[in-house]
Structures are given as C-alpha cells and as structure tokens.
Length: 388
Image 1 (cartoon, rainbow, N blue to C red):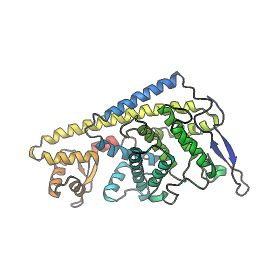
Image 2 (cartoon, one colour; image 1 turned 135 degrees about the vertical axis):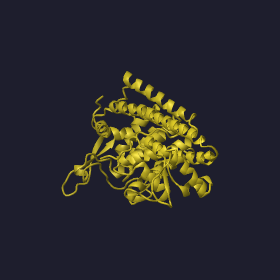
Image 3 (cartoon, rainbow, N blue to C red; image 1 turned 90 degrees about the vertical axis):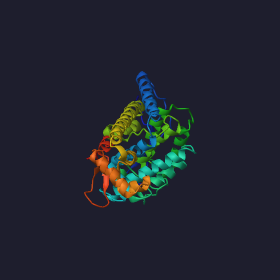
Image 4 (spheres, helix red, strand yellow; image 1 turned 180 degrees about the vertical axis):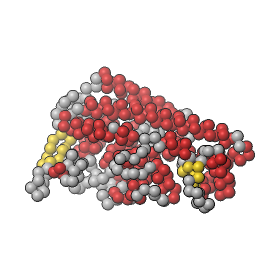
C-alpha cells in the first residue's frame, strides 16, 4: 500500500552552502492502518506456529542453558558481521577463554560486548518492562569497550548522524535531528506498551524495529540494538521462554532487500511489504533454530553413547564432553577449573575424546593445549561466514 511519506523532512544547518535535510518519522501505528490481507494473516499464523514449536523445544532440551551459551554467541557474531566485523564464533570463544584474538581485537571485542549486552538486557527484563531507560543501559554495555567506547555509550546522541555517504548532504538516509529524538522515542515507547492501540506481538516487533532504525537514536550501535529489540520483545511478552530467536542471519542473507525495504517504508509507506518480509524471516529463522538444536542434540547423544563404551574412564570423559557442548573450544586448565577436576584427569579425558574423534587438539603444543568440538562447531557455524 502506498501511503506516501511516513514522516516529514526538516532542513539541517547548511555547511559550506550545502543543503541537507533530516527525516522525522510519524508516530506508530501507521495511518491509515495496516491492511492485514489473507496473505499476511497466513504468514502471522505460520510464524506463530514456528515460534511455538521453537519455544516447545526448551522443554525437551537436556539443558537449555548449554545450547543457549553457544547459540547466543552465534547471534552476536552474525549481528556484528552485518556491521562489518570479521570475527568468527571460534574467534569469540578463544577470546573469552584466553583473551587472545585471532582477528583485530576491536572486532572480537565488539562481538563480546554484544553477548554482554544481550545477557544484561534479558536479565533486566525479568524484573522491569522494556523502556527507553533500559535501552540506554543496554547500549551502555554494548559500547562499553573497544571502538564504540568513545561514542557516548548509554546516551542518546546530541549531534547529527547519517547512514551511508560522508556527510548529511550525500548520505543515503539522515535520521531526525538531536532535538527531536526524545519526542520520537517517547512515541515509540508508548507504542511498545500498546498506546494508543493494542498491537499483536509480531506486528509490533516488525514496526518497532523499523521505527528504531529510522530514529537511529545513538551515535553507534543502532543496528545491533535494533536487532536485539526484536528478541527482547518476544521474551518480554512471553512468546519465548528462552532467547532462541534472532533475525540477524535472515537479515544478513537478504541484506540488500532489508535495506531497500527500510528506505521504501519511509518514502512510500508500504509497511505491508516489510511485514511480509519480517514474518517470513520469523518463520524461517524459528525453523532453522529448531533444526540446529535438534542436530546438536542428536550429535551429543550419539557421542555420549560412544564415550560410555570406553568403560571405567567414561565418567570424567562424559563430564568433559558435557562442558564441550556449552564451550566447544576449551583448554585443559579452564576445563579443570570449571569441573573441579585435576589437570591429569582432564588431560586423560580429552585424550579419550580425541581418540574417538570427538575433540581435536588445536595447538600442537605440549603445554596450554586447547581442544575443539569440531562437529558441534560445524553445526553452529552454519551461516556465520564473514561478509565480503
């Protein structure tokens, strides 16, 4: 549906005679209202079914926390890759364990910050509603260290930013001026809390993500926080008991269409095209997450049976194998500390796992050895190849 502009332009102070203008979005919901035709209704139903199945998985996972540890890190890698980092899941796991980065430190630090911000936000949501104050707190964690740490972490911007180009005059998109951010965000916060109208969760998440990206309220980290906002909404409103759904892989795989749709909404008001894209993404992503969880469970169960067959030494080896599911890259020292086992016991267990082809020693060193659960990592790594 073509509604025309979904906001208005305001002129910016000219620099060297160059004229530029910023876009200020209208408050949500769209006017006239969304046309929820038969296709969109069907997409909503399919997406909700996929979400329900994914949420149901948490009741059959042997230990949801084990799966979530690695899955949240996969999302952090993907979301940061969209912003241009080259860090992989293995890079992140090594960095968390040893403080060593196989890629530029800023890249892996950015991914590590994302994990911390996600965990912080989810913890806070257990006790307080989603709000502007909470988004600022999460942003403060997201940019706490590394290259974004000097871009006002935890504070809404007080200067003009832009997307694409080298200045507002040649930018692809220029968000609202700083003096209009609070008004725009205040309206968005009301919308999140069903003011002026109650909005179905999937539609709310779809619209809120676009609005946040359009306001671009921070100097840095808007894309990452905007993607986190989707998951926070699903958890805050009870659609997911655990944070299992992230759209970064879908946005990464369809990034040009994603950017084109964001811009199209602003210029034409075709929210329906975006909603179809978003709902398709929710369904596909929920199915992928479910398939990943099942594949990891199947692999772990098969390997567990093989470990049990080694006899007397299987007890400690099973404990180390269980830790490998949560941390698919680990050192002898970190495993011993985590499991309260002696270094000789952990060393022997990992040698058993290596002999079975479950774990692989990656360093070739006599001391400070590191082992990887390769087959487990391979399943997790699907889709995490860095962008060109």
